[in-house]
Image 1 (tube, rainbow over the protein chains, first blue to last red):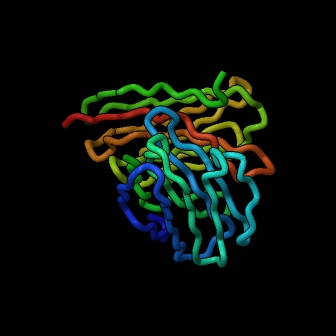
Image 2 (cartoon, rainbow over the protein chains, first blue to last red):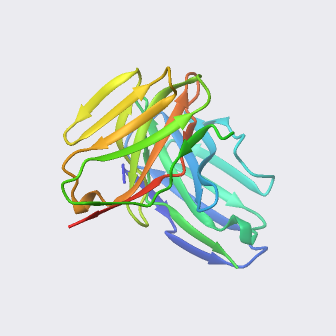
Image 3 (cartoon, helix red, strand yellow):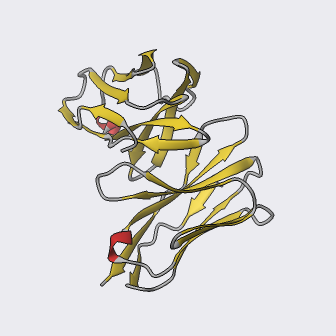
Length: 111
Length: 111
């Protein structure tokens, strides 16, 4: 999984609760990405960072979603409040040398 | 019209067959072309990365890009049961790190 640790691997929560997904890239990289995968919409970019700075957040669905990257080894994606339509697999990925590599994903279920 | 179109399949072939997977795209701004393989409940794994039109070969895999037709292909020779997975094409425009994915084609190789 390209040296990316995501936690938790599975999350089940109730509508209205805050959800925080975490990503720890192990190896060196230039970019960090958050993607979301659903059956209906496939794999979609939410946001990406370059050197810890957000570059493109046009894929973030709405204000309920926020992402931070306080340092090169850690990023969070927060959903507050969560809704059932947020149920999906969320992937963190890293990019270097024009290639992108994905972590194992967090499977989120919002009841 | 979606930016990237990919036949979702499913595609079922016997072991040893040649597999052809395809994507079409509408925006000529796409300059970088990738194929990812995704096993069930895993993150996407980068298989092939190409920049220019033409063919690129890596073992049993060949990626083909035809920019004039806006058509990309992945060929798998001597397919194996371990190739059973979902294959996603991913495209990127120059000046951006955002990947735009096809919906994926589910492939099953039967022993």
